Length: 302
Image (cartoon, rainbow, N blue to C red; front, side, top):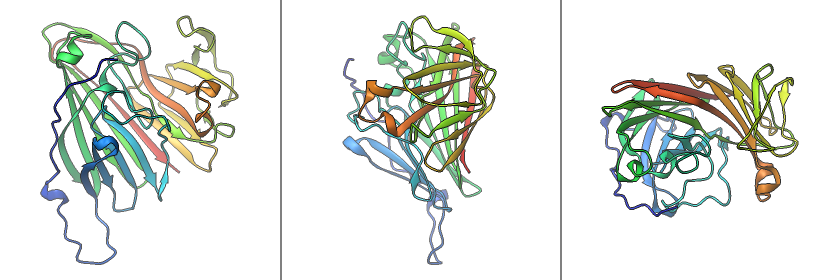
């Protein structure tokens, strides 16, 4: 993969909405803080007055941590690299404008570019930030279209919400596929996903380029070995039992498909500690000039 040469569009958040004076000891407020993360990459930390916290990197617009009661519900692989050259392996990486393998780089370029922080706000004590990505020489070298993507992250007491909007700013139509490749911290032997029974499946384990079609017959999808399945027309809410005592609701709007993945022994160092349950759009989204597409995800821990 070629090294990137880009300038950061990043400045500390100074919005008066987040300049609060704590006159009462022990009282907490919503806050957004810009700081340096691993590898000196710009990072944003959201904190809710209830004590929940989320961290995201501008490189790849990757949410790398979501803590409720100091317990991180997301997982970043121990082999993750924070150097601005390779995608961050873990948390919630973007797959855009291509999910999986295809004519451009694996999972597209959205997870391998610097997003810009464009706004922050506080709505009913929920910290919210919005990031944007636009086309440039790097993206156009592999996908020659003009686009504008906005990614809004909202933190609440027990919920992390994301909203992705892609707009066609070109003078010709384009199509794309996309996903949120979410890594959940889990005990792989105890984890299970419910809500997928009856869905059409594409099992990619035997041959990723020629998936085996089937139908999900199980009430609980588990992870007994290497798992890589696409669920078409999935319900807009799934339930993940992470095997660590947490039950997480995965709700969505306009993410039509779901992906369940665990690499098993192909990633022997860490596969026992996470599972991926991904909201995806595996069929092409077609946008005419000036048209937009939006999809929302809500992760809530019980």
